[in-house]
Length: 219
View (cartoon, rainbow, N blue to C red):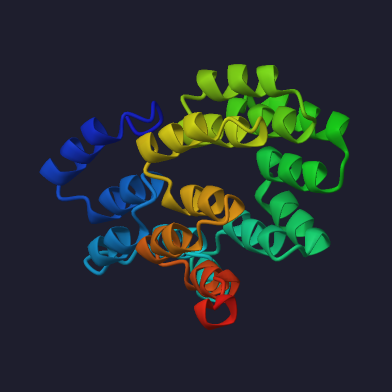
């Protein structure tokens, strides 16, 4: 059920089994990072805890936990998020993570190479992201639909300027970080701040506060 993105059913089964690590993983998939960390206090699963910190934009904590878990793919994701592409590539190679290497290739603008990696892995989410970066929005919608990736669909509509549809999909996906990005783009900094704070992304929350116009200056 988790692989099929049927999160509520997956959550119900993991709760019955009292599998706190897997419950945490489902909550991360639903972008409920704070709740995931609360659940993971009962588990020693460093990888899932690292996923939660990644979602919150707390890369230092995420990297520390991925190292404790010897999770090379996770380390690669942190370095990619920090724009350290060579380090990311090195760790993805160690992990034999073709999808991770595909993400690096997108970052480098090497779209043909990225396509080959994602096709080898049958990674529809990766193919959707690639199509999105290439401006092929209809293809991106197709791949994200195949992956049942609601957040991905929201990102396509965001790029297309269809903000109401983007908002609808971000809410369905519980992706309040992406919703915060949308509000930030629309210069609704109060709502952006609330969204970022709700997922524990303090960096983006502070950035939203800084962008708010000073009322005293407007008078």
